[in-house]
Length: 163
Image 1 (cartoon, one colour):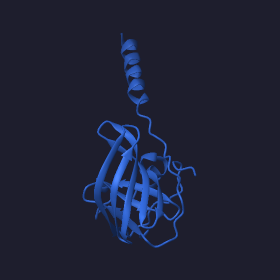
Image 2 (cartoon, one colour):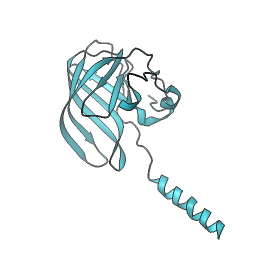
Image 3 (cartoon, one colour):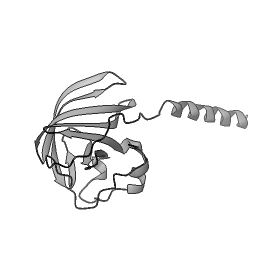
Image 4 (cartoon, rainbow, N blue to C red):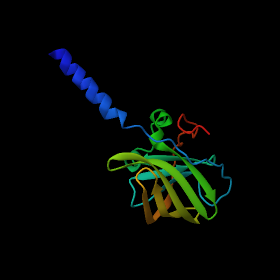
């Protein structure tokens, strides 16, 4: 009887986790050497639960707001380096900004492509975002504003973005 219970639990775990694979980032990253945005901090919005670090090599790091607080400004870099839920890609063609990140939405991890306009080197706003998996396309007007980050941000070289 004990063997059957263990087998049932193992089968349940396999079924549970087989549908939880994360999508791969599709958008190509491009280096950006201009000064339309700042790269010595992060951007946050009142409407989202994450903040965005941009890197000049075209990489985006998405961190939960709960991981960036006044009391805790150090990011667990070892965990972040190997988890693709944190990473995305960035393209800037002034005044447009585009980035692609993996995001959890109610019942799935999806690949979301964001489109926006740069207001100044300390702010931009999202005009729309799209997810192909669930055919989601929303018009948005989310403003992201810059916050200086005094600690060293994690290196953008990671195991999740290959190109």
